[in-house]
Image (cartoon, rainbow, N blue to C red; front, side):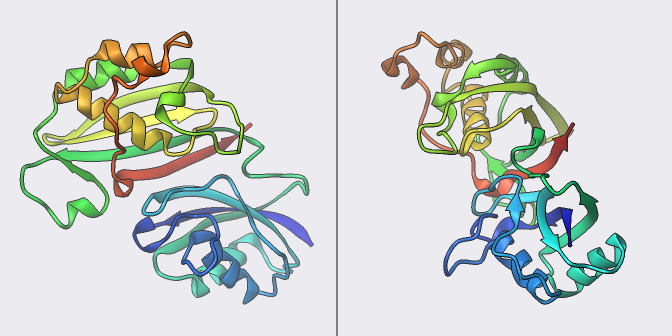
Amino acid sequence: MARYQLTLAYDGTDFFGSQRQANKRTVQGELEKALCKLGWAGDSVLMSGRTDTGVHATRQVSAFDLDWSHSEEELVRALNAVLPTDTAVHEARIVRSSFHPRFDASFRRYCYRLFCQPLRHPLRERFAWRVSPAIKGNFLAETASLFLGTHDFSAYGSPTTPGGGTVRTVMKAEWFQAEQDEWHFEVQANAFLYRMVRRLVFVQVAVAQGKVSTAAVARSLAGQVSAGKRNELPAGLAPAHGLTLVEVAYA
């Protein structure tokens, strides 16, 4: 019996998120079904965190204990043979018995993709948010820089546990123009609030469309700001299908 760490990729379109839910298709549920076919007898696999319904991943991390007499490479092949086509294991390795993919993580990194077009594009919109009217890229960069450092992000998400804190440290928040009409937002933090990345993107797009000021964003991050001032920001979230979990790192 050994503890294995898996790196998973999945298209989140047809999943109700990563975390197991009764009577709903989830990434965790599909992984546990696949493991059962290999003789796994555990109650629940451990996940590095949960992703919302429709969110994708290229490097989600899970862990479980398994009595497996073959190599890690053979475990990857065996799991991929029984997993659905929208989910794949890219790596498996043995780790210490106390390893926990969530609590041992040093940071997580997400990428959000959007493109600016007035007419819908069914193929692109599976993995990116179509935004119209077009945005101004210089406002994206200016707003993203405000999120760097340690702030109270309560205006951008809710705690992942009841009564949990809302202070997070963001190490990276940058926009890249991938194509003439397409932008990618990369954000890295020690941890994220529930729906925090989608909220950050929504507010930044609102700034880049002239709907709210960067000053209002700055005020929303200030610890002394009143609840009324926080309401300067427009309500809403960027759609889940533009978001991908791209890295979970460990010291």
